[in-house]
Length: 95
Image (cartoon, rainbow, N blue to C red; front, side, top):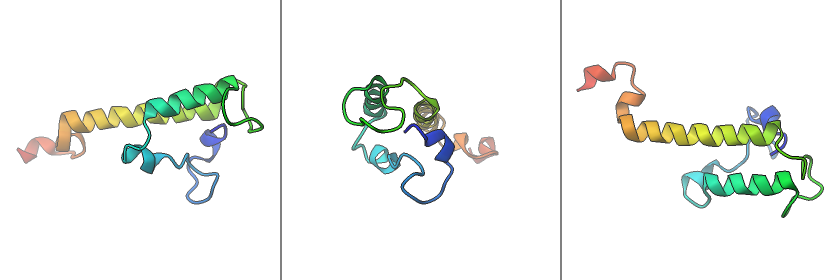
């Protein structure tokens, strides 16, 4: 998580992305659970000892993951609220 901001746009490999998207999409984990796991990591509690950034507070990587989770929830809300009007440039013409 600590290096997420620097590596998030990579395509393949172990160090690119959080690898959490499928688990979030299928409901196996929630954004809230990820947030609290990151809080534990930042505070030096739980698993992660020896990993870069462990116990050193919020860093660019964990802040970026939180931002992406907020953005994800916001876009899901917009999709539910506006439906097709949210993504189609001429959605007013579709009615």
